[in-house]
Image (cartoon, rainbow, N blue to C red; front, side):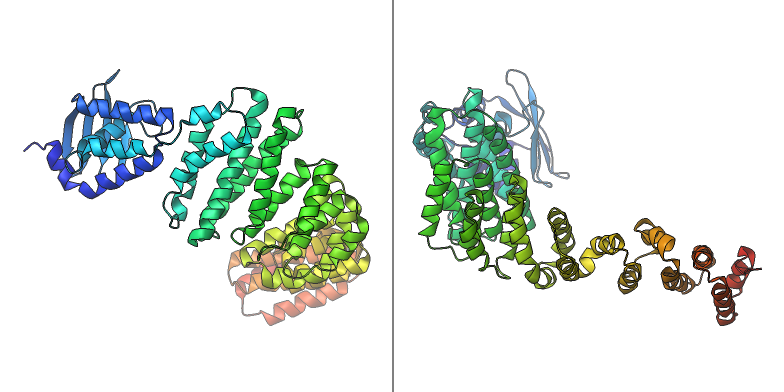
Length: 524
């Protein structure tokens, strides 16, 4: 028995309503492109251009044919809750929308839907785009973002990326044609979008510490970084100055929000003030404002002031504010040190990094989440390699790293020729003989072969404990290397006694005895 559109619509009413709502959220009546898309979809419905080609109640797959400039097919999978079209457009197209309109008309009035949708229009975006001023750009951003964040409730983290990408694409359509304005437009809209997202999160209590949100924020920071890098390398237009003033205000507003994504807000602020806002007058004025501002609950403004003192070469206030470093703000101070190194302020970065050393052990081992410790320790190694440390400071640093800084500590001990301590470190944090051979064991054997003998013994015993012929062969390979080290140390007699003791200890392991005999380990 053949099905009709009415049968399909009433069988899948919930999916159709949700899909129409999702499409409505993506379409903005103030955008000419969206208004035209809705108009053409409605035209297809009214002109009976949509034909039901097939529907299977078993697979719940609907295929519709649409007579347009060229014939297209729209497929709706109700089981997978997906809709697709054969036309070249990759995103939402008029054909998909037309099919949903066709199915929706059996339980809503399309005329009422269209009237309500058009009533949301306030001003044409292209009209605002033609007015080259921060006020018109802000109104343009508000027009799109008010529609994006119209619901005063938390947004599911799974939808954040697609929701904001949709808003960004609508704003991108109004991008200026002049190349010298394009990067500034991109940066302005990215900051405006980010400010609204953080404000919405704060108002609705939306969780901002999920992996999805962090991934989005990181990508947004990278996009802003690209635009900032481009703008900083081009001649600044006099007409663009009001836009920089507006950006300065927005970036400060983001920093001073009461909560949500504190590390991101600080990173964004530092990026602007180290790469884009570099004029002495602007820096001095911003510092004066910060001196009079009450700090938000989750960001220590002393960290931000430290950056300004560094750039303005105010060493005395910097030394004073560094005394406010604590376990709670040490990570932020390290971010400032990283920015300082990138800008060439080596002496100031050195002051910060040295002041941070006493806090690092508690910060790494207790404050950082376990998944961040290894990566963050590597970051610290790179930073501290760029400054000069005393022997005592280096020892304190590597002690703070603990097991997350074994590689760096081992390299440090090798540089100083402290081979016995290098061996002790690898006994404390065992890895594998293959790793040690790549990490400096050959250097230790070349300079102090006798201190390496306990390591060879430890890893040979680890192989024997596995109790397989393959592992016994591996143990013999280790003993061969041990024999070579013993020979260099003038301890062949010791090695012969050692192997004899091993044979006696494991005399019941016939396979091991055979491998030792075949290997000719006994000194003749």
